Length: 351
View 1 (cartoon, rainbow, N blue to C red):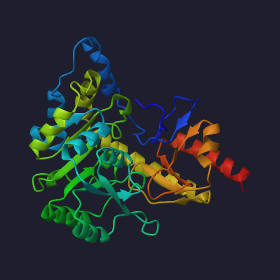
View 2 (view 1 turned 60 degrees about the vertical axis):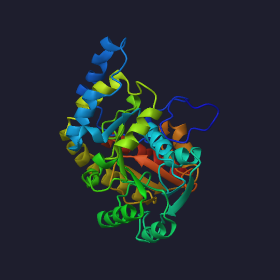
View 3 (view 1 turned 120 degrees about the vertical axis):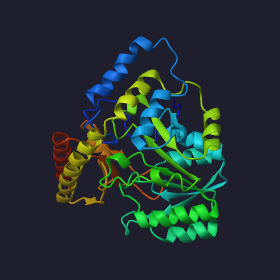
View 4 (view 1 turned 120 degrees about the horizontal axis):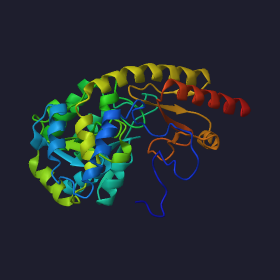
């Protein structure tokens, strides 16, 4: 629970009336009714502790990811697993993108790690470039953090560049954390789980939060061949950290690959329409390969929308971005139209 500090993410719809939330990037077509029912059907078990080993859930994830069960550790959302990973690994120096998801830096700095930025430039479209290889070779950090697809840019790392990054990090003994929490909603599902047996220093993070629209249940998992690291993470976690409803919902969701395929197709269509609509309004929109868009607009645009009951994500607190950068989720067609119409009215008033 936060206490007397600013909330650094989207989705805070609890302090004022909100009719549409574009500030969080969950799958707009979920959760599935059968997944909701699985969570609700666990109400008869609420007087019992959850399975501390998440046995049935781990088996379901292993089938989904086509990995051995011993590679997998579950947690109370991806954020908990990031924190456990950092505390177990204890890196002294780390490289991460700027901009990227803030929880890596939050956990790393709390553990006393020096975090260095790899600046993704506006001119390059905020994508990783080959220059990172020189940084890795010269600085040889203990850890490289990659968010793929990246949040808030929505861009995937080039597969050939990622191959070279993983190979170099393996040679230099640099640990790599790849956050794939949006990979199931990306146009190209280029997961690196098949690389796990090849690279002992590779950790991959995923969650049910975004892909299955289960943010309220808090359910994530990580994958690596390093059983010693998973053991240290487990010993640092709280017991019973994954609730009964979350485990039941995760078991059902993990077996619904068709839902992700259908979601990707609909998201791709709606993203194209939403991007075109933003550009028609004269806004600068970055290319995206996933279920959200990064765009540039007038400073204070988020406040104007909030007054009208619509939340978007102000990205000024991302390293590498500033006031005037915003991220919006791709939502169903009718919601996207409401956003575009509201933006049009605001921009005309301030034109």
